[in-house]
Length: 71
Image 1 (cartoon, rainbow, N blue to C red):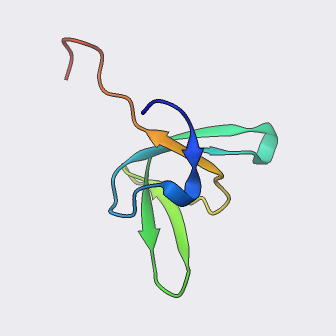
Image 2: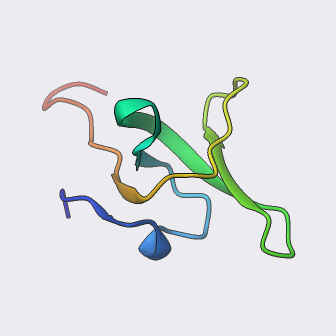
């Protein structure tokens, strides 16, 4: 799968994904993971850490693999 999917179908197990959010004229966020704090409180944060958290993503897609021959 290499096309954008509705955010409602995103993995719920912490699998890293790329996100699309329409705010700020459209923005792709890479290597994000789902955080579920319970009671419907769900957001996405960077896998590598950082100050960003996203609640308004509308679509997701799998993080692409490394270039062939690279790790």
